[in-house]
Image (cartoon, rainbow, N blue to C red; front, side):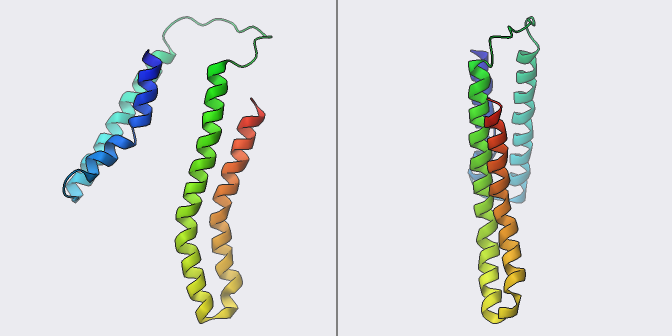
Length: 140
């Protein structure tokens, strides 16, 4: 039961500060309050996860047992998050970079190679996320 509570707290950790910020008028004070809320929720989640992790006894694992179902689920979840967040980051980075590159190329065609380098660098984020997810899935 406590694992589910820790998991839900970790899922709600980004949602609580966002809700804190967007409820009401957005001011600098509200932003500071949202940051403090984010830090507090994260600290509570880390404390509960550490307490749960270090409670109980440790046993040696069987060599034939392989990877547990929970570890396999965490690996799949981690691979999905790495790929998804990498693609979201790429979308955020490529949008302004590609818009600026198209505007610059329309004014001066000689800078096309320089402009495309910045767009390609932003695309690298998705490739790195995909490589990390392959590394994670290779161990499962």
